[in-house]
Picture 1 (cartoon, rainbow, N blue to C red):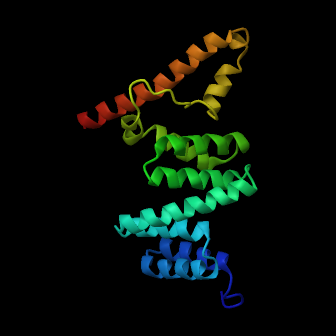
Picture 2: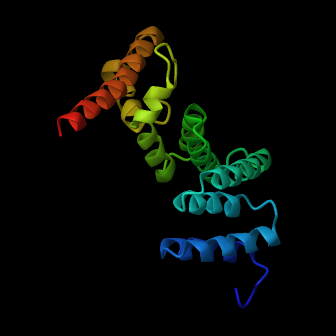
Picture 3: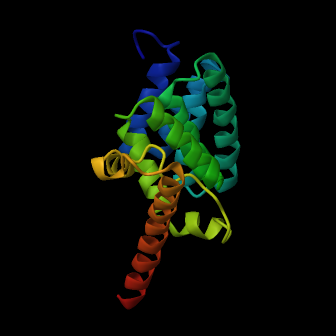
Length: 193
């Protein structure tokens, strides 16, 4: 920052370090400086939202998440294959309570870059959460298996090569139900202590 005080990226990185050290107010000041340099800084608004949420300032966090979402949308208009922006957009959607949209972003990011471990982790965390399952109606049709390495491995096995698309569709439904049952089982186990 001393060498290039006008570097938005450096101020964002400083904010990340300060936040990790628990110095949240100083992190906010770094993000504010990044936003002064670039008022459309999606990373600064995104990380500022996380810090504000950590500080219990939920309404302010939501405002920052919405601003970062606009930035990610702009970035994806320029480069629709930016898996990092898709992943971060998914995190923003998740923080805004838009869980189906978050899942779609994670799946797209994984389809673009199958090595995107952050999108994979967030996808698994999301579909394993009580909030996600409670947000679905009984008849919700949602694509949980796209980008799922385990399912893709299963579907690619020789025994399934001759399956009709209808049969694979049934297998997909069973795969989704597996996630729902695992969630229900984990909730029951938590109640047992």
